[in-house]
Length: 173
Length: 419
Image (cartoon, rainbow over all chains, first blue to last red; front, side):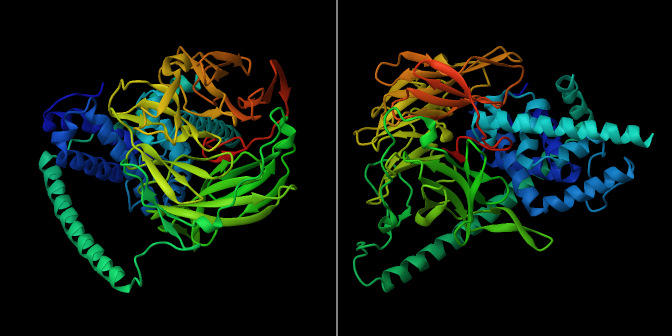
């Protein structure tokens, strides 16, 4: 459960791992996830007097982190990262992409990273962070209807990708 | 099973990251300090630049700056609420064509316009045949992102992002621009065959003020766009450039995709919880944009939130106000989670009474895809709704299936689709 505390340090220690894990699932890269999470918390620190009064300070940090994932994805030419990750996926889980530190290239991870960023954000917030749809809508600045549509598309795509992967594995065997 | 295991699989995937040591808080403090220095430097530079531009502009202007003829008009707020400083090309504006007859069927309005995700263009199609009649390329420097329809099925307003830089992938510019500087609004006119006649720029608004939901009045004379700066919205007369800001009060918020016009005075919107979890008058409201007072005083609650949202976390804000302003079409979602029921209900704007259910109730095991009303005749006696599989026509109390071909995936029906 998200924490409610006036003390920043306590808040930071209680919520950092949740935020960094969430961001990692969206960007697929450990270093980038740490950088984004730290930036989001640093921004919270500069406004802590105000943010501490919010019902859910962690929601504020999460929203900032989500916006930073968008900026980061654009900066890093998402297409190249994705192709690198896919290459890692083809080499096997032991392969590493040297410029960054991608998460292990499991079938699910590769399928998630193939989703468009908006769908990935919604999927991760719904399934990993267990947030209700209206909270996701507020976090992403979109309507509930859009969240639902993106969730439906993401599930559809993910299911198709994972089923295809299973098929490929069976064919190889 | 897929749903059940997804949470565990995702958690397993990111577990190595979640187990990393938490960086020392001094790292954050250093980062925050550097950020503070950067912000101060940027603010000083920006202030100096604005001052320099201001001096230059004052020196170069020949007269008082009062707009004449067809010169662009810088919007002048008509009330004390802060409205964005848009620039409006009033000479380009023309009224939309007449509304269809009060009881006209959907066949009189076959054309839909929708954004093509990731392309920055829009397409015109016949919703009954799925025939493409045109692909509209953006005006120079624009990336098209949203569409709204006037009442005649031939006039549409397209929202575009301007400025910023696009991603460069293998030498090709792709995707929406990073850090757009403005939102442009263009008017698209179609001929009776669905082919474009004209695409003209109506005006621009700074990006910080508007890159979200919007709506155009039935006669295309009034534009409403969500104001991203204050979580309210602005209304602007495209004929005069006069703008009025409708800022939220009581720490509530306006759902940005919920705007819908009747005529050129009545604007429906959803009043939602913002920082205040329980602002007064939550729900679907109708505003008289000519009335004095703030957003809540000038508007009236038609359907309270609890009447259309009975499933925590799964409701939506899309609604449709009939062109004559008499009825409001609202999607109702009921829970519990994992067993949602969606329906589209018609309410009287005058009394708030529920008048009809315009689609059979749909049961969905998960949150999506949503049901919504896509089109209605001016009186709301005929309504076409869509729930992801087939269209449903409500015609004077009778329900029947109708063949529709709306775009299916990855589209926000509230802002990227107009019929």
